[in-house]
Amino acid sequence: MQLDQPLTDKEFDELDNFLLGDQSPEDSMTMDHLHGYLTAIAIGPEPITPAEWLPSIWGEDRKDGPKFKNPKQEERIYNLITRFMNEVLVTFEVAPKEFEPLFVEHEHEGKVLLNAEAWCWGFWEGMELRPGSWDAIWDSEAAPLMRPIYLLGADEIKPEELPEVEDPVKAHQLALDIEANLPAIHKWWVPRRKTGVTTVKHEEPKVGRNDDCPCGSGKKYKKCHGAEQ
Image (cartoon, rainbow, N blue to C red; front, side):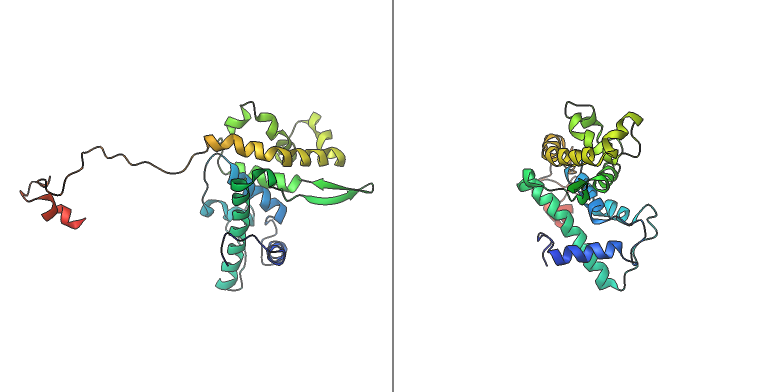
């Protein structure tokens, strides 16, 4: 199975059941929580390697990871998680306006509303993998785009802001705002995103193969240290 293929419904359910099952720690992320987490990593200010973000999926106690039945199951689960991440990355790369956050639906007074709280918790945890790296957007004209995520995802909000999240209808509107804002958040970071690629500068001039070897042997570079290249 190629890593660029999106999860099928069956595979989605398989990963969902594993995260919720007895083999995973009790505080493992749920699928909506995980989706928010991966989204922050995908669109944020700098690349983060899987080795850094994978452990947090299983909760705060990183030593208490999942209890896989065998290496084959471990490979399978991490393959599903990687492909889940790739879905997010590819969507933002080719069609960011079509990105759909994985929010939970619930019924309230006969209406189906969205609950984005767990997704926002995940997004917030994704931001905290690089403390301070998101400060630039909070200090910019784009800060209002982040406010709905803050209201639903931050550990603490101001008392006067609580009515905005405690009312299911208002919380539903925040979810809609998040979905509308994500392409713009992604776009804001694109020209500012660190590539993670380090350019190596060669301060010394390159030695030609027919030049004298700089080691002082008196031989041509190609017959001395150049022969080791």
